[in-house]
Image 1: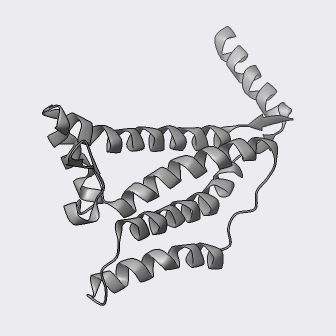
Image 2 (image 1 turned 135 degrees about the horizontal axis):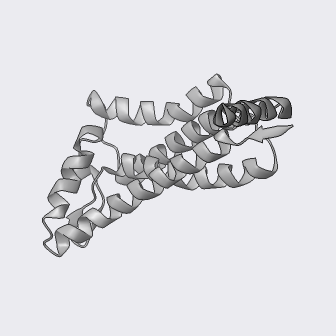
Length: 172
């Protein structure tokens, strides 16, 4: 038997993407601080995914981060928990979060964002960060174990048959 490692590879591709995104989120205010025109393009890059309102964002070097506090928490959480799950899944299986658990972890974000959206209350950046972290955990715990299931055993005979086809094509 040969194991197809597509699930493991996909998890690390996602983790690399989260690492780049988190790096850019923190790099953007620094670039704005030093007057780099690249900062403007990075803010534009994140604009479709976040409202970027200054009153709902953290500031570094006197400039707002590329995304709001909730999105910052979500992306950091996707990166952190993605690494944790990627490492653990190499050694043991983790059962995917059931749908009710996924909904439960997303509930604080929905309540915090929803009540703020309709004007019942104003949230704080710390609360936004925490709800974003919970959302990132929910996504990773729900999705990563399912991605890892793409690890499948393939019969060695299929591999040999394919090798044989290649050999016969070269000869003919």
